[in-house]
Image 1 (cartoon, each protein chain N blue to C red):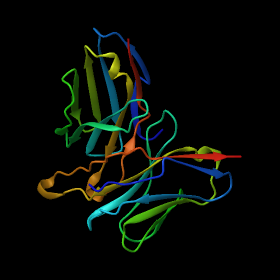
Image 2: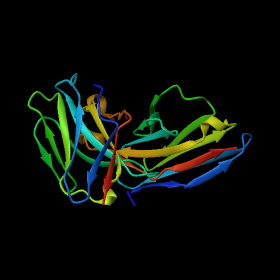
Image 3: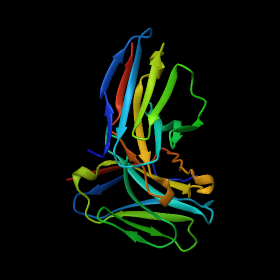
Length: 117
Length: 113
């Protein structure tokens, strides 16, 4: 799976949009971009994923550049509860051959997002 | 609750003890995973089970022994651990045929004394 590069930390004011960048310049055509977050001492939480089109759900938006070498996770109105470590992961689509399949997520250091009042 | 339940939440054990961590999911997922998260380090994948068969073992010492008796349950049996094994142990499950994300449990905070 391709490696990703994220800034180690970012700050954001409560109520403002938080834009978290991720570089994945070696991404290949079959690899998806996934975002997770981990609030202190809890398990990681799935946020969103995409292949080439921009995606939006109730938690966030994912903007993927046309060349797919970078992406941005957008939390439109950050709250104090959004303070967490955010992980950008590039992962191949699981192999469905043979009737069994699983996907492997490899976590990096992530970005520590601190939302302040 | 995420749908993946881990017990116990906290565990303190001596180096000569034997204990087990339990993970349970009723999401209908077909793959389950154990991760280890040590202080200030990224999550490390330990074991992967797909359709109850172990498909990956990432050079984990034999003092960690996983067991997957059915698609809903995953155990991690621990024996003669070292203090450096103290960490947060996370279980996850997925239904990866459709490329969905993982669902993680809240983890077991293990302290080896």
